[in-house]
Each structure stands twice: as structure tokens, then as C-alpha cells.
Length: 222
Image (cartoon, rainbow, N blue to C red):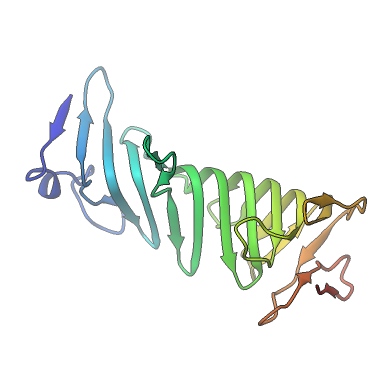
């Protein structure tokens, strides 16, 4: 096991030795970097404000570990023992898309990711999922999700989604399976078998309901 000091780490630790679009390029960590090259292992551990870039993808987090044998990076935040708050949870930026998450495993070879508790915020509103798989075409499969246009930390209203899929080709849209609305914490007894999420209008004042089976969407305002 080798621990890199603050003077050595910035210059020495690009794990593949090349900073190019073909290989992931890691920044030096604020606190320390630990390398483990024993018994067939080729692991690098980064502690404190880490960033990795690969092609058009950028991932930042407080902690990362990189398996050079498999090409997989694991990233998560760090729990502050004094405040009980998480520090610098992972944020992935890919093109114009931005994802915030609790933890992620991303494979640079397959371009697949397994994500826990991810939130996206774009023109379609705010989409949150507990268990997520990201595929090479940047489509996203979500289970146990929520969709809302309310930007409160605890949204006043949302759709509870049993499953959803964000597709990017030929254009981006979100389709979902069984879902039901939740307003002020009350789960309404209305099951929506399937539908897709329409584009959020500017300055939407209330709950934007999804569109079902190709019909017109409706908005319920408070």
C-alpha cells in the first residue's frame, strides 16, 4: 500500500498514465490518495474533492475508488461525524445533462452505471429515483421514483412512479409504468397505468400532470 503525499499526488496519479479522451483522467485528491497493487489488485483510493473526466462525462465527489482491472469507479459523499450531514455527494455531468446522486458505480469500458438515489433537474421538471441503471446510449431505467415540478426540498406534490425510463434517442422523453399522485403527503387512490412526462412550461404555477396514451396533458394548479 502506498500513500501519496500532498506534493506528489498532483503530478503522479493519473491511474492510466495518460490524460486523453480515451482514458479516464483523475484530479489529485485534497486529502490523500492510496494505491494498492498487491495480490493482483490495481486499486486507487481518492479522499477529498475528487474529479474524473472521460470523453464528455465529468464526475465529482468527496470520495472515489478506481479499479484499474475492471475500469470501474465507485463514488460517494462522506458523512460529517460532527454535523451528521453528507459532504460533496457525487455529481455527474454528461453533455447538457446533470445528475446528483447518493452513490454511483460507473464502468468506463461498458459505459454502464448503477446509481442509488439520483435526482435530475431539467426542462421536464425534477425526477428522482432510488434504484437506477444508466445504459451506454444514456437512457436511464428507474424504479421507485418521483416526478414533480415543485422545487421545494420536500415537494408539496409529485407522481410516485413504480418504474420509469428516460430515453434520449431520437429525442429525450420520460415514459413510466404504474404511478399515482401524492399531494401534501397524501397518496391519492388514483392509479395511472402508463404515460409520458411532457415538457415543463415556463413559470409553471402548479402540478403538471403527465400525458396518457397520446392525449392532451392537463395541469392542476394550487
